[in-house]
Length: 155
Image (cartoon, rainbow, N blue to C red):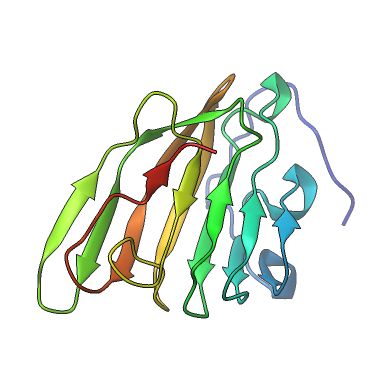
């Protein structure tokens, strides 16, 4: 089906269903996400030391949500273009029941996982939404080990 664009409200009395093989993406190398290929889909990251870069936020793409699932233990990064920053929070939890929520600083534009204290183990996930110009809302759970530490950093 081709891409459809509506300028007014769209109502569905029975809801919208996103399902099928095109609703999940698998990445195995450093990747820059795009609105057309990744927004509204679940992207599974299977690159142990990968770098995933979010697209630059444009006003036409506000509200776009990128759901990222860690399918391979990861020591990589999820970063913005350097201009866009993160707001929101990420919980880092470990298998002994310890957990802590971390809030990004005003200049943070990188989620830096180390497969340990900053999370990145299989089963971790992050949802990132284009909230405003230069502002991504981040929420999720990173599974880690040891004494948890913030995954947020500056590029």
